[in-house]
Structure formats: C-alpha cells, structure tokens
Length: 398
Image 1 (tube, helix red, strand yellow):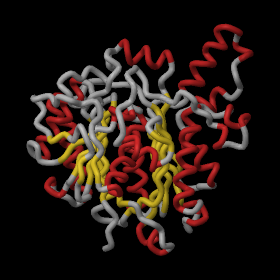
Image 2 (tube, one colour):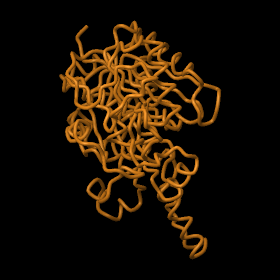
Image 3 (cartoon, helix red, strand yellow):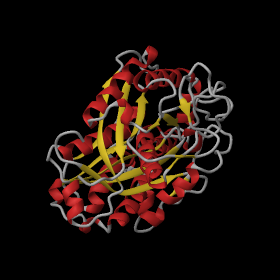
Image 4 (cartoon, helix red, strand yellow):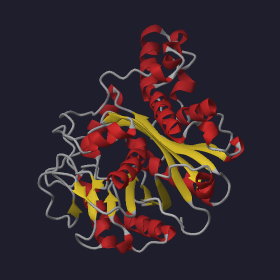
C-alpha cells in the first residue's frame, strides 16, 4: 500500500463448488462452465470434517462451516497459527458476509410455524447472526485483535480485505485473517432474487455477453492471511502476493441499480489506484465484478473503459464458474487474482460467446490467456450502492 507498512499475503483457503482448496479452485476456474441452473452450490456438502464431530458441525450454519473450512486451509499453508509469530492481541479477524445464516433462519421459521415456538432451536441466534463466521475463526485460533464483520452486500468481501490490510498498514495489527463467506441459496432466498428479476431466466451466467440476462446464485468462502511484510520476511514465510491498496465509496443513487455510466465505480477505481501508488497504465488485469446482469455489466464496462481506456487492459469475470456468491464474491475473486498471478494465466470468462458490442473492453473468454503478472484490480459492487476495489500484485522485494 502506498505509504505506511507493506501488507503480505501468506495464506489462502477456498471452499467453492468450483473446487475445495486453492489448487482445485484454480483448476475449476480454467475448466468447463458450471451446469445450467439457478444455483451453483454443493450437492453433497459435509461440514463435519472441519469440526470435532457431526454434533458440533450441526451447531454451525453452512456459511460458518465454509468459513472455518477455508480458514483451516489458509492456516495450514502458513504452518499454523503459532508460525505467525505475533502477539494474539495484534492478530485480527476482519470477515464478510452479505446475509449470514439464512439456511438456519429459514429452517427454524418452518419449525416455528409447524410445531410452535418452544421447538425453535436455542442455537438459532448464534447460528444465524452475520458475525458468527468471523467470530468462530477468532475463537478457534485464539485471535484477540480486532474482530469485526463487514456486511455490505456484494462488496463486503472486498471491503473486509481492504480494512484488514489498512489496519496492518496503519500499525494497529501485525496480522489478520480476512475474506468472506456466503450461502444464501435457500428456497426463499432464490425466490426473492428471482422475483426482483436479478437471476438469469436461462440459468446461465455469461458476463458481458450480449445475451446476458442475470446472475446465477453461488456459495462458498475464501480466506486470506495477511501479515505485515517484515514480520512475514523475518519468519521466512512464502509470500504469495501483496495488497497494494484499495478503496470503497457509495453511489448514493439506488438500492439495487448502479449509478448511470458507472460514475461511482469510476471514482472507486481511481481512489484505489491512488492509494496503491499506481497509474492506470500500471494495471495488467481487471478481475471484474461481472455479474451478468444487463445494467451492472454495462456500468462496470463503462467504468473500466473510462479509467483504463478502450480495450486497454485484459478483463475477466469468474462468475460463469462460481456463480454470484454475494458477500463472499470479493474474497473468492481476490484469491482468483492471486492464483492468476501464481499460475501466469488469466482465467476465461466462462459461458460468454458474443461480447456485447456496446462494451468496449478486452474481455478474456474462450480459453485462459497467458500474461506477465503485474498489478490486478479486483472490483465488486453491491446492493445499497456499495463499491469496493482491491489491488493485488506479485510479491516483490523492496
């Protein structure tokens, strides 16, 4: 980040239908598109391996299970929590979700209606609350620094990563677990999004395609472990990348629609570049929010063209593979950007065949594209007019 202390990424964890584990997730991102349907979710998810048995797993909503599973992989990668040799009071947990434990809430409302209030689970509140995933991570690993949950719809994951990185940059924390999780594909959740015409009627997510007609609901979780650069170097950590900077702002326009022309997104990207100490020409890839909705893709493409120029930077969206994971999207996409750096390839925008001619962007589709890794701008925009941008880059000495 421009000014202040540098922020290293030392651990990654992913739980997604595209692949459990960062390596499998990458294989999924460059593999075939997801099957047609309104959701891209696990058919056979079992959270019990990530707990001390099935009983403990049943006391955690699916969204919390995703968070703990992803955190487990990330901590394994860094060699365990004790390997990150910082004071527990300076090791924070800044996590994100868009909705929280919707599966539990919906299930317990059904029980209440069918069997009465006395049959409602005493675990309902701790299972449904949005801060449960982040809190469970901090408790499992004994992290006593700031523990906060960001709930800003589809921008939440990006906002959490930015906030965690800034706390390290400013010297408040020395390390942080960050990321996001989501599992909102319940019958009521799907009905709500469908009735507001946000979901694809064709059951296909095809970002920036001329025939795009809405998103497909995804789910999952992604975790990044961040450390102050000198702390990571001193312990000989394998530094996977760097958080150069980021930004957030608000459209202040409409509860669900983006500001016309992407004006809020334009400003957010410009703020992120300024914080990162970059010019637009320094950016080598944009991992776009790319939801496959007509309005959002048009506004985002306009913003990308305004900031970087027409056809000036490779653009991709992973949502043809992952679906739209709402509050987890920013974390899943930040991890995708870091994996793109490690694998020296840009994943293609799945399902997209005919790029909308009104959108003047260099979209990567059809096959992965080789590239020389450099700074990546990852964008996310959420209901409520929330905009978020994270800038990641290859690890470099200095």
